Image: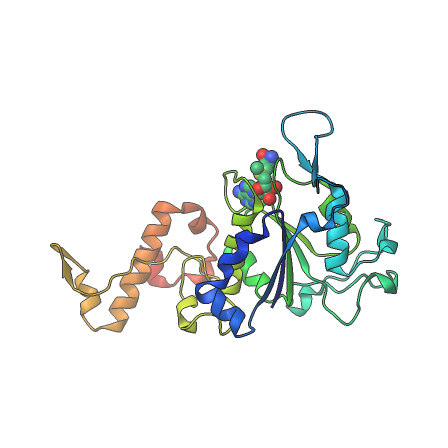
Length: 281
Ligand code: SAM
C-alpha cells in the first residue's frame, strides 16, 4: 500500500519507522512518504494560512497551496481546474475502495494506468472514523492524507476534488478537538494498516477483536498467568479446558460489557448474528 501524507510538520511521522509499522516499511508492505505542505508555497514566509472570510478568531489553511500540492500528488494537471468536469467512477464496487480517474476527463489530468489515491482529511466536524472504515480502506492501493492545522482547511478543497472525481473522505477520530491532523492521521493509519495481510506477526490476532465483523461487540476481558495474582483469580471457567464453555463465557461477557458500556453497538447489532443462547442473556 502506498501512503502519502501532507503536513506542515512532516517530522511527526518519523515514528512510523518504529515497531510493526517500521518492519512493514522495511518489508515493502507499506511505502510512506510524508510531504511538507510549505514546499508548495512561493512566498518568502512559506505561508499556508490566511484570515477567515466572515471574521472570527484564528487562521484557515489556504486552498491555493493545498491545490498545488494535491494536484501534484494526485497527478492532476492544471487543465483539471474546472470543477464541473465529469465525476470519476467509484471503483469500490470492485472492492478496492479507490477511484478510477474521471472517465472523460482530460487524459493529461491523470495517469490512467495507476489507481487514484483515496484522499482523506481528518476533521473533527466530520463523521466518525470506525473499524468499518478502517477495513474498507485497508483494501485501497494508495491513500493520501491531508493534515489540517489552525482553524482547519478551506471547505472548498474537499469539494473541489470531489468534483474532479477523486474519492475524498473526511473523518473525525472522536468528539474532541486536537491541534492538528497529524495525530488523527496516525490513528487512522495504524487502524488501517494493521489489517493488511502480513502486517501483524499473528494474523489471528485481528480476527476476533472489539468492533470487528458483522457481530461487532466490545471484546471480552483478557487474562494471562498466574491464575491467582495479588489475591485476584481469573474466572474458573477459563481454567476448565472446556472450549465450548470458555467460548460461551467470553461471548456472554462481550454482550454484557457492550450492553453496559456501548449500548449503541447492541442496538445496531444484526439480530441474525445472535444465537439462541445470546437471546437469553
Ligand atoms: N476549528 C475546527 C473545529 O472547531 O471543528 C478545529 C480545527 S483543529 C484545531 C485543526 C485540525 O486538527 C483540523 O483541521 C483537523 O485536521 C485536526 N483535528 C482536530 N481534531 C480532530 C478530530 N477529533 N478528528 C480528526 N481531526 C482532527
